Length: 329
Image (cartoon, rainbow, N blue to C red; front, side, top):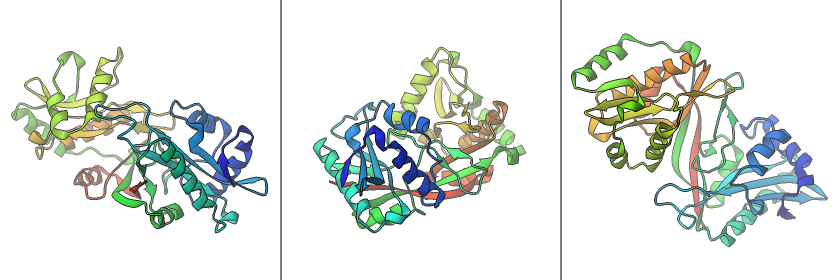
């Protein structure tokens, strides 16, 4: 039987989750009640109709969770954004009973009732769930960038018409291993000779960034810069600027409680590519992480994205591959 989650289901849901973690089926951290409440029940995007459990003989043997955006970027709304699958787990001993298929079908029906036209598994989900990076001392990344291609769920969803659209590689660097090279300062000098200043950005400079965001086509970067620089206490941002315009940036620089150096990403204005801007800013970012006490950094990027070469040169290593998956409802 498939039904919506009830509060007294939590102990059995925790058992399902932690059995899947210990079995190596999923990369998530072990579940505790506080984490479940913080990430699911207390989150502003929580919708009770999108957390379903599979019950067999009075026991919860599996569950699926979904979410939809409630805060939108420019041009987005509830009608033109997808629904998202966040988690799908079935107890190892209870598989091949049809629970997984019924859970997916149940969630698809719930999204149809909400008017959604498609479902995704991607990092664009409004629900961020931490996962542990393989081959590290339980270092964690703050959100799952799609479906783990090493998981059973990846093949299962492909059979149910979820199409991999983009492949992402998660990368990791222990900051104790980071080494800055003379190349970085040489490139900074080359940029300066072109009238481009690269490094920490002072909001008092009041540079314009809309042109860069327009050319990149990213409302997300526009929002990051606008919101951060409007804050009474903005976190450090690293930027390349020339003639009053920001033409590249990374940050904001922050460190999570688990020691991870956190940032939203890195961006270069297409008009200023192939000059070394990203190389300088990204290495500056690693140094800023070390300054604020971060122990490691992790990120994800497209498997075909040329930026991967920059990350490899900086010392990052591939850790796992994920897929953005989509199904039309």
